[in-house]
Image 1 (tube, rainbow, N blue to C red):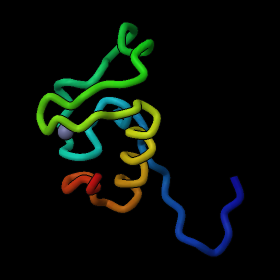
Image 2 (image 1 turned 90 degrees about the vertical axis):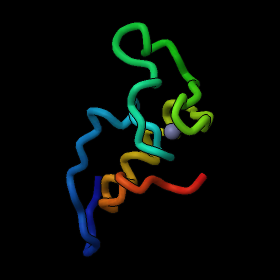
Image 3 (image 1 turned 60 degrees about the vertical axis):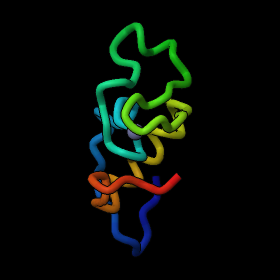
Image 4 (image 1 turned 60 degrees about the horizontal axis):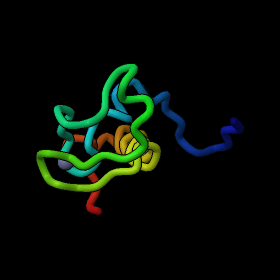
Amino acid sequence: MQVCSCQFEIVNESYTTQTCSHCGDMSSSPKGRAGLGIREWTCAECGTWHDRDINAAKNILAVGLDRLDVGIPC
Ligand SMILES: [Zn+2]
């Protein structure tokens, strides 16, 4: 990855696939070995439908912006 003059931060991706990018809930997402085969899931907390990779990308973006606690409007 090439980094120019823009600000760059290392983002912890550990929980990005398990956290709802809308409300931050982690209880209803696919987890562990069984969860690896699950591509799509719906948050039990706010009812938002997620594609796992897109949700992870949103969470990585949110972490980068320090706004994971408020989520990203769908
Ligand atoms: Zn949610």
